[in-house]
Image 1 (cartoon, rainbow, N blue to C red):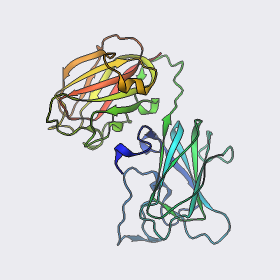
Image 2 (image 1 turned 60 degrees about the horizontal axis):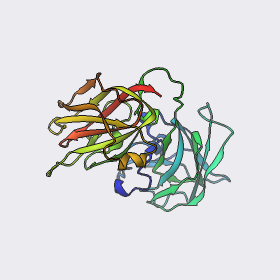
Image 3 (image 1 turned 180 degrees about the vertical axis):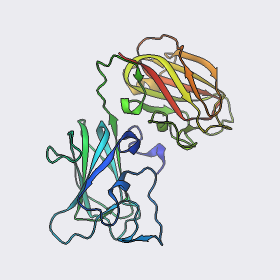
Image 4 (image 1 turned 45 degrees about the vertical axis):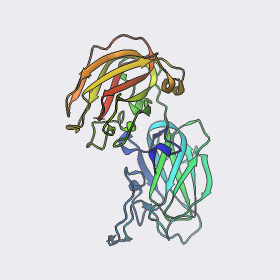
Length: 323
């Protein structure tokens, strides 16, 4: 699916294991392990691959149910979040997909909550070998999701799109204000031909060149840029620009600008309101660059990272104290 036309493009994927999300329980996983349900990357199909239980499938698959009821699995989110959409993906499941699915949610400290579940997505018809992009009309914050399938079968992937909602008010120390686990988001960029802007604020260093933000080669005037929304407004005092794995395609220079806006829309349309945090500065390949002397521009909500003229950046860290 084209990322630019994805209906939930503005939201982050809450099911990512690198955020700490885990599948903590499945009523049955005879044919395919529950952990595969949230694995990164697209599901694969290997025609000749079998194991002791039968055909190997890249997803979660229960056995054929011969008793009343239905199968389900429980996902514990690594960070609390509001869910705005899901993709129940049955890719490669053709004669073994569930005819229906629903999703419940709850807030709990337990790995496998027993009660407190509330409906999040009503029972919905599914098709085989298909993506099911379904909107969720809820603004509540949840810690757990329960995917129910009726009566049994296999699901390749569950993608959960929403907002991280950490409790940062009252924090009296410097944190990474743009970190995904702190609610930061990449909201707009000039180009992401080779790598998604949403890789910029995920935990850990980049795994490879594909685990970063990379633009196409610029053949005309101008430069590339990305706008990052902080998880909570704050004063940015230091930054890290990491060009890990980018060697022949790192940006020559970088500039950071910041401003306070009422919402993301104002940030993407703003002209002439950005203040310079870091003037154009030379970068090096495959290196973490620490900038500890940023300009004092006060409390801000968004930061624009401009790269000159183009290239790839693995991670951006923006340290400061929440306002």
